Length: 235
Ligand code: HPA
Image (cartoon, rainbow, N blue to C red; front, side, top):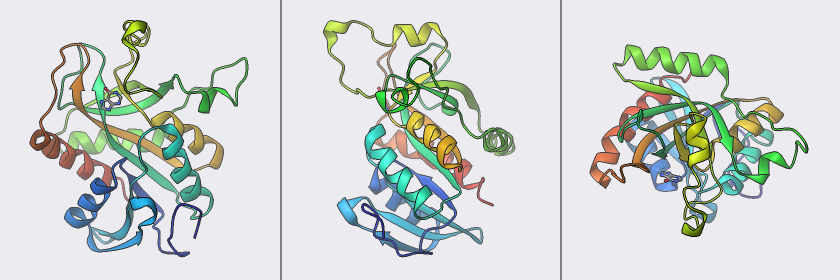
């Protein structure tokens, strides 16, 4: 048992999907895994372990934002020795080349968060996905008939920015950053330090240029394809 996760040793699989929303973890467990067993209810941050095509897989909620996400990732990697963590989440599109419903593979995660820069005074660390996982995800997506847009994303600390700041995303857009979410840079930074494999897959739920947004029903179908792709990476 760790501070925020109530699982006993051995109850969590080496391979894990990590959505932000604990109800999404429950949904994945109930709809994609065989014989799912709930191992955590602390703070309602549900975690389950089950089988996917005969392989042991866990799925766990991690909350919103880098601080919450990093607490769970830290405990999963350092105390439960999880080897591979795939974040499955949603994002807002920043550029014209990305549309709502698209599937994004976050090769790198830029960030405005001090949680990363505090370790690198005077320099800027580049949080990146595990190359081998990113390549396999791109290959599997092709086999599954899914179109994936791969590139740099922004992990921001702020969802509701002060309108007085103007368009806070313009500088990221100019450098080709595809979309904004709130966790991946924390995951990739811990993957580098704690030596586990990490990848982030995202569905585009809203567009910050066109202001379009997916309804709850539409979110579900794109979410299912992303989960299938993430689960295809289980070994
Ligand atoms: N900002 C940050 N995170 C998000 C967004 C957004 O607009 N949409 C989905 N996740």
